[in-house]
Length: 178
Image 1: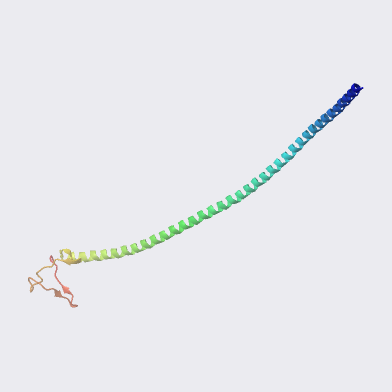
Image 2: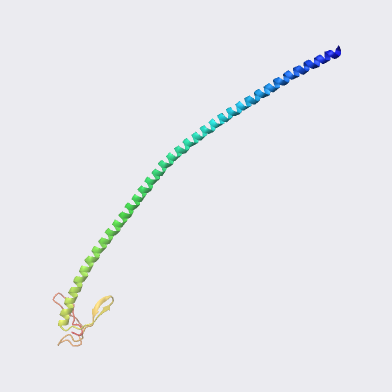
């Protein structure tokens, strides 16, 4: 009886092992199914999170593009205004330069007119002297104009050493060659 009892216990243990084995298989199958479902849920959740991240990134990129567009427009305006300012400055400098040149030209024209008048007067004087037979030489004496004078200052003054005096007291001499 002992052997029968042991066989029965062994049979009961085997039945119990089969039941446990079936339960373990069922648990493993359930775990596999739960794993598949969990994997799908993780994929969906991860895909959703990645998509949300990409959407946020796209929003940030679009916002940055808008900011860059505004920034580039501002720089275009700044550069444009700078160029206008430089153009105005260059125009002002050119105008100032031309005004100064016009002033200089006006002064030079006045000087030229005065010199032409002096030249005309000198030509008249030279023609009058030539008409009277004047052939005297000029030089510079101590930085001043001087002329060679004759020692024969007329009938009564041969070897002259003093100047004649005009009505206003100005000393006068007869130039040499006249």
